[in-house]
Image (cartoon, rainbow, N blue to C red; front, side, top):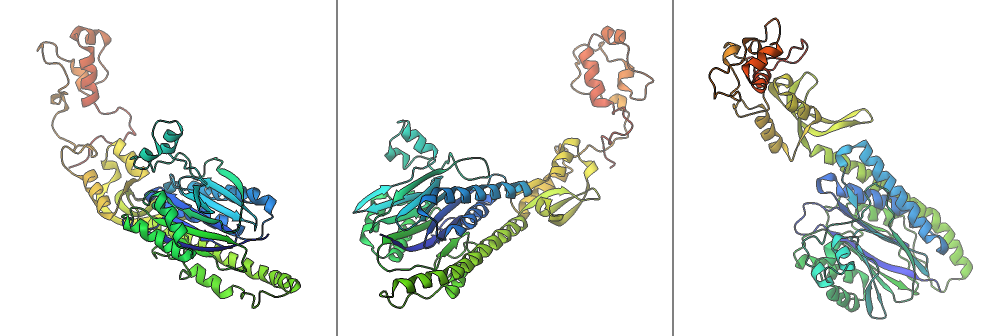
Length: 479
């Protein structure tokens, strides 16, 4: 018996988060949820990249090749994450969960990593078919805490595994699909807010997938909506239901997740709907007619998938550019001035990822060596205000500011003995040659021993004598 999927999906940014780092794809064969992580390290970029790599799987796949197809797509997604971080080190730390199913008509391939979840409702029995890759789940497995304690543990969102470009093998499995099976795939924005009993009751009570999705998202928002919420509900049925329009939403949508619902109103879904083939007019059509229609549908579906893929990739590029333009740092210009830059340090394909936002009157060589190294590497800031504050702190003339070199003084150097020198014995003074950098030579070892304080002599020379190297940068700045 060949089954079809009747599905619905929605992604909401929640009530607390400024943006949506979840990405969702729901099609006739592929259902996938990716929950990006990394905050300012662009979790939405990571989830977008992974969903874009998975989307081409929404084609006919032989039932015995489900795991191979999933593994190949996941490996490609992980490599893309690695390449993206290599090209822009500022994105180091970004990653994403992934829970996806690939449907063949009688079997279902499943890939899972992270804490997004997949559930199954079969004959009224509700069960979780994935296992969280989290710290608290590890504690539960070791018997150190109970499942009830895990649900309220302060570190329940701490992941032990995710897709982040490093070598890692997610969990793969294949399940038999039966008529009437209902699958739920969701991010932890639902499962960590709404109890399993409430989720199960909702899946039983709302038979229409779209109504069920709306209800589950509403329950998460009513619970405070502390995180992005993404939900897919799909029913396996032997009825003649053809769902050809993929649902793309969250960070994977062209609007970059600012819309609350990932439904047919998204640009990607609208584009798919314009080219989707018409539903067969009569279920009693002959077998030969059905085969001809299926052959005609494949080129159209391929075009739709390519269009969706282009939208996803374009959205990823847009997000990367927008991310750089929201960043600020303190750095040095080519002529040696200290300035606030908008963007991130570095280049891609010869193009600078930052531009001067504001230049100060302070030169790089007026800073201490340590401060110069920090500025050359770029001092990151949260926003423009924070960058201006860090620039002011860095270049302040406050005597307590250790980033600026001291002003050059015209006073004799001999009188500026370091207070670190011992003063207990007035007669134990440091020999004159060690205090005068212009002397023809350093003190003899015998003179140092006679003074009785070799450590004092070394301290005075370090604090009062300039470097003898002719090319060293000046240790003070002109007033």
